[in-house]
Image (cartoon, rainbow, N blue to C red; front, top):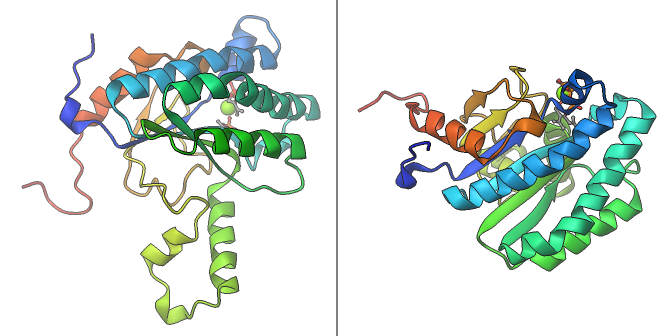
Length: 237
Ligand code: IPE
Ligand code: IPE
Ligand code: MG
């Protein structure tokens, strides 16, 4: 059992679900087998977040850089995300999970996937237990670029630009800052995830590969988060 203070649970947890390929390679399997196993970890993480009382959970499913992967893997990941949404939306809905998305909806994202995203968003829009956001075709720099475009199109005068206003032009203006970012697979980087929202988040890196990640690992990351002293540039009282 991991000991957690229920009064100091992070409001927003973000996960970089990494290490699927290596998990498969270690077993002599094709990379996509690792992605398939990652679905179970995703459900574990959602259930773990619900148990802990986390309010916002955001996961990195596909980055703007992931288009560089071999076409077969890209194709698989797109189809797989579509399948997961179709297979799991009802179950997540019944669990009180609201499903949202951040990322660019450019020509590379197939219409069928956009349709599934809209369905899932629509079905779950009134749920409040957990706001679960999938970052798909997401890049932190792309988000900043898109926010600047949106500000300019709105004709905002330069004198009016401040942090609050920029935040209002991001993909999801309601998304709060990330309190805890977890990255699996032993890589120590953010890989262009949630640039704006990660500014003051606590980061926990674990060697566990994503397909092996479960609710206990999530609880351990939250315990680690609770041991940190967040100063936001100030001094501890
Ligand atoms: C993360 O696992 C899944 C996606 C990026 C979609 P990887 O596929 O990056 O796995 P590794 O890092 O190659 O092991
Ligand atoms: C980050 O993982 C993107 C997702 C988990 C979707 P990557 O595996 O793509 O990142 P790098 O290449 O190690 O930086
Ligand atoms: Mg990776």
